[in-house]
Image 1 (cartoon, rainbow, N blue to C red):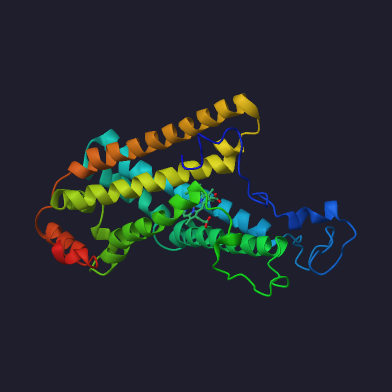
Image 2: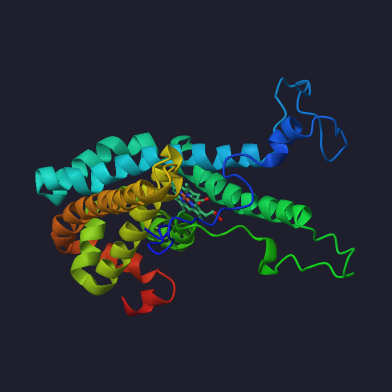
Length: 310
Ligand code: HEM
């Protein structure tokens, strides 16, 4: 989506450092004799722990990648529970039974920290750390020694920061949206007697019935931003993005276009599926009756700022 530039005339602007590996890691192939402390030799023995010595970029890119694999597993379970099963059963109470069946696999200790919390932090922090490491590497490589002009550029100056890709641009808004979703569905219910066991798809259906505008806008933003980030993210891991086309010239451009449309079509299909079950079945489930409905109202009132109007 965001990465593809129709007017690029076959030219691409490339980052100074390769995406996967820092040149630091492979420098010794090109300059084998420079065994200075800043250019350590390539064939270092493994450490006492038996770990081979790679650059920080090598480790960070792998943390960013593999943490997203774990989170994807949770995402698949989540779309099954909140969209596919509701579509198949066409009933919120019936779907709740399946939700309760699978819940023990991802809620509680140790599943939740291992499947959700740790990979999420690892993914985001490694992404930010990668950015800082690459920025410092660029500054070092492209002469921010400060010796020539006597002025060192500020860390925050835009000069050496790596380009922010479309996937990353979607990743940042995804964060507050997901944090809000987790807060409403996981943190607030914990504050009530009975905790999470009070909450299921009926809790979401209640919000749609009572506050349709906030619910449709909020869930649409979460689904669209999340699904597009994850689909383009996977395309990048698998080497399928338009930027990763290696064929040059006109044929390359055709492939870039095909990939751009293909990835967006897939994202639209997944988002559409999620909305079909989420909005079409859960969203139309109606208000929860009696005591449970009152408790849900109290839960939604605990949302900071907007809660007072709910
Ligand atoms: C579930 C599967 C996911 C996949 C396949 C995925 C994939 C990716 C990829 C490929 C990047 C690197 C983009 C680049 O360097 O061009 C990235 C960055 C990012 N992701 Fe994800 N992601 C996933 C989940 C998440 C989640 C759940 C969040 C948070 C809510 C998130 C937030 C971010 C952020 C903030 C960045 C930007 C890091 C940076 O470059 O500064 N991602 N993701």
